[in-house]
Amino acid sequence: MPEPSFKRAVTRGDWILFGILLTLTALIFMRSCAFRSHKKYVWITAKDKTVGYYPLNQDRIVKVQGPLGTTVIQIQGGQASIIQAPCPHKFCQKMGPIPSHGRIMVCIPNRIIVEIKGKGGNKTDAVTR
Amino acid sequence: MPSPDERYKASHIERTVQFALFAVFATGVHALESLVTLPIPWLRIGFAHIVTMLMLPYFGAKFILGIFLIRVCVGSALVGKLFSPGFLLAFSGGLGATLVMLCVYRYFHEFLSFWGISLIGAFTHNLLQVTTASLVIHHSATFLLLPYFLALALATGTISGLLTNRIHAWQIS
Image (cartoon, each protein chain N blue to C red):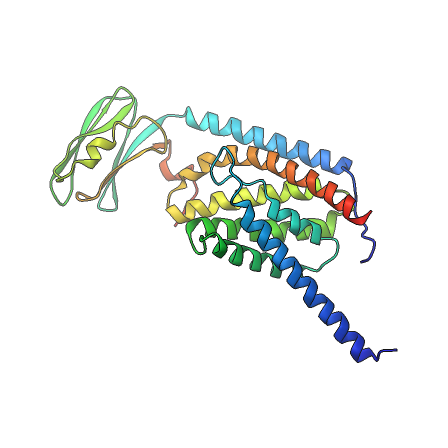
């Protein structure tokens, strides 16, 4: 085998690179923490269409029409929950209440998705489709 | 004195044998690594990438990519994870990391040891895995894990990189 022209020990470049990546990770950590403390919204989707979004810190009750009937969503005390659903199993009621970003409640029979997102909804996250 | 034709044949056979041996070695490491239990499920130190990095100074891009394809397919099949979502993540991350490490080695091998290459590889691997995961589950919530994944990449990249430095020094001495 030919003698490789390769560094055998840790070089200064390694340390510089390590420093850069460490700073990058720390920055992303800080950004994600800041992102979490942003104002949160409750996004409600029915039949693949956005019905509306409501700030999480204002108490209110939202009624949404699905194929089976009316699902009642309650926003109270910084949490969202489904308090009334027309579906047979009521799994969506048991999934709540949801308090934080990225959490989700789904009612498959009534085709309703309740999701908590940061400000601007899809704008802050990547587009995945 | 062998004729040029025979000499070509000999080197060709040598290359084939080397390829086979490295393929078996890399596959074995890849499969055995999934048996190592770590506190976080799916966390891997990246021993399979050590094999990739050890090949960097001696073999070309085609050789190394071929070894990667074989090890990820056969290795996943051995542990029963071929074509599972986990396989998709391992494949995309590994392919990206291998390509990036090849480029970094080619252009920066005078400035970086295996530690630097390993760090860049680990970062690419985890970044691509998070991206692929978000594509697989059609939800961008996986990016919330990104900071933790990158911190883990710093740790595992350092471990495997320094190990590779050791192994390589021992290998050529």
